[in-house]
Image (cartoon, rainbow over all chains, first blue to last red; front, top):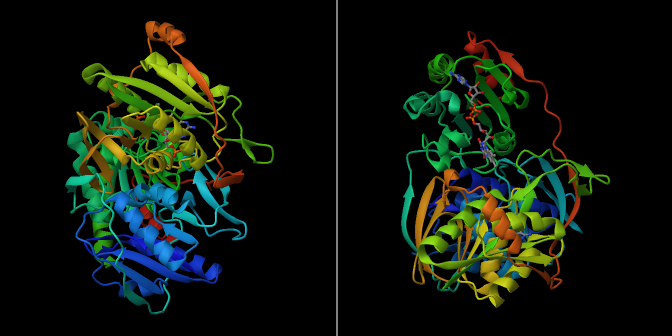
Length: 318
Length: 249
Ligand SMILES: Cc1cc2nc3c(=O)[nH]c(=O)nc-3n(C[C@H](O)[C@H](O)[C@H](O)COP(=O)(O)OP(=O)(O)OC[C@H]3O[C@@H](n4cnc5c(N)ncnc54)[C@H](O)[C@@H]3O)c2cc1C
Ligand SMILES: Nc1ncnc2c1ncn2[C@@H]1O[C@H](COP(=O)(O)O)[C@@H](O)[C@H]1O
């Protein structure tokens, strides 16, 4: 028996979230005395996966674009080949897309948004985040094959010294009625899902013309940019930047909220960020109650100064 | 005419305080206002557009007890033609998806609109499971959808961008904001509410599908430690705290 993990790659490379999933799956394999097998698609160099505890790698070669239905079916074949009883996925858009189809295919129970290792493996019980991070639920999976989706940034990276064998795996590719017409991805920008730091701004910024303040700060920090819902509703920023209960969840190490009041629906999306910094003119803004560090001040004054000081700090600490 | 089914999950309003009763075994619904899941409301509004512009019938369905009926009536007041309630508590995503799959299959729907996730349990599992069960195409995180005959063009949000897909009906989507804009959402008017009372709301028996997951208990996150305030004139202190104390720089 082995634990099976699906490791995502982009243009042949692994992102931090993928290595985090490997780290978690490796700890799970340890906990259940199993080996860890990874399924990867079109990876150029898999050797790094051994460092995160993967024992065996099934490298699938395909010229096909990501297609959730097809990929779910390939992962299913890998699970059957390895007789795996535990499958680990990430919280990326792609993993969440294929997971429910994989569940039906394997007649498995699936829990997304898992935040820690199982508290018990027989019965199999894990903690996951529910009510948009306002609570946790201990949940049991009652099926023989179990699938879990790890929350972003919930486990961290754990390195090991080990080696992995790479196996060629030639699954059957099913046909799908879905074809990809085009992908529009900003390659020069950090996405909210991958970012260690997110710089986010709200209606306090007054208008889209002031977003250079936010972008400059984000650039110095290597951060992703985000916004509150009204900002995207007003068309100041793209929908893809809207965070909160009805937008994207953020699970970064640092979240800097500028000119955002901290409405409950906004906080729901950022609760799982580790450290929150708030910059707001209003000392009564609710966000201060949910943050770790705060500055009462005008964004137009504080943000450029912060950007300059951080630039100097980065130059010194490189 | 095209047949559309919109899956409606009945969830606590976004401002609700989340509490639990009975030794943290159950969600405490006392004093909580329930609403149409926001992602489903975007989907329902998009369905009304197809109805008005391309001709379609729109049914709404929810798996749950009698307490979900006001939410279904609201969907009827927004303009859906008929509502179905599957009379069983929604205990896990798989069981809910099985019930909905049966309705979707037997009703011969061309397009099944569900939400990307419900904001209560945040499973994000139901739409994909329906698609896999009934053998329909599936587009998740759907932010735009156009139909022409039995062909569909959909846009999916991906990490860091978007992807355009083409496919055919029958189709299931996991929808979200973008399908329509916030300003397009309809608040039911008096006439809609009156008409909704006369529209059919059919209660069907559940098929008693087995669950694959089971809730054990809930807990709330630990209380936050107090915030540290930094003077706006002393930004160096903030940087130092983030570097030395929080260790995030
Ligand atoms: C069903 C539903 C779902 C929702 N989902 C979401 C969601 O997912 N995400 C989300 O964000 N919101 C959501 N909302 C909206 C939410 O309730 C708030 O309206 C929204 O978050 C407020 O955005 P804001 O903080 O940018 O704007 P405002 O509330 O207008 O706050 C602006 C803030 O900027 C401060 N400010 C003003 N000028 C300056 C300055 N010069 N410098 C510094 N600070 C300044 C003000 O003091 C104020 O605190 C939802 C609402 C509903 C009803
Ligand atoms: N009890 C339910 N009844 C009807 N539809 C549901 C129910 N639960 C979930 N759905 C649909 O499935 C979507 C995703 O829900 P979930 O998988 O629970 O996050 C929701 O937005 C609804 O469209």
